[in-house]
Image (cartoon, rainbow, N blue to C red):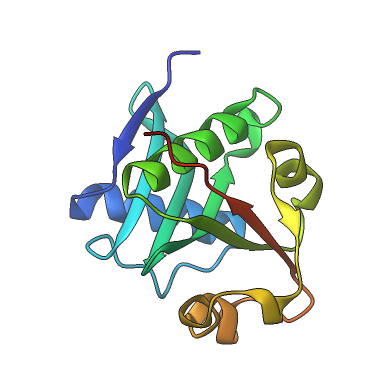
Length: 149
């Protein structure tokens, strides 16, 4: 599988990105390619995976991680997650939060820990993802980022 990661920075890429999220049943209406880190993984010009980070001061909020149905089980989700973690480290973020209804076990394997929503940094709590996009029943998770010197 020859996958190429692409920064979502053109209207065409953004349209494909949001289209995949819509197909996957994930929120996309509040995304903004200019203010967020959005990554698409392509194979033969076809978008097969997505992921993003919203940045709030020293913290990031991972969202929009999706894999097309016929590409699941090929470790692409792991590749996307680590790519996003690397992007967060490049931006010198202290930690990453996420909300999930279906992927708690997946993110636990990567190192995220389940936390209470009240423990989340206030700017992240105020995000649309936390305040009204994701249900309060979604699992809240956190990964502390170790910065290398």
